Length: 295
Image (cartoon, rainbow, N blue to C red):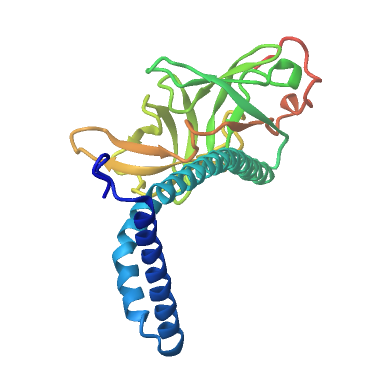
């Protein structure tokens, strides 16, 4: 050691470092030779790998986490885009299905109307509803057919199931009809089973009529079907009007109270049939009637 500086000589320091390098090299050669011939270092390597694994995992964790987040964000965006596309396609498909269902229902209604026209056996015209009367005590509808189509006041209105009413006002392009349930409307009917004649009067409710002036001992029962009698010539004879739902007889009264449920779908039909009767005055074809129609 140099007494002036207090440090070891340079040669001595270099010899010590060289000796350490040589020792390490010799040790490495010995370990490699032992590992190559007998695999004696495998246990040490395994132990060292086990001890180092947590450190490797900790170093790799941020990288793996970043990749996982990126993959999930990409997958989420892809799924959101796909879901939005599928949602639009589903909405479009639902709209088309609703339209197809409406067309199918309309075709079914029109087929039923045409079948009923064949049963009536007279000239008919299909009309659509434009509006309904908002008066709760009135049962009237507006149709998209008028005088230019051959419509006239008093013309009967039917659907696939029964009598609906008759035209009370006719304009050039539209007309107004009163339903059979309107309190101001009455039509001649006949009990199909017994042949009993009577008058069915509207009561106001959606599908109820009343068979008036029926004697207490008259042959009418619950379930009897009422059809048009043809009297008056405005309604085709033999067409359904309704079914008897109740018969109340009171010995203290001269007449029975007979309630009838309408056969026609009075409040649900969009298309109806306007009927020309068998009378010659009503057999004019559409668009061949004068400007002012006579009842």
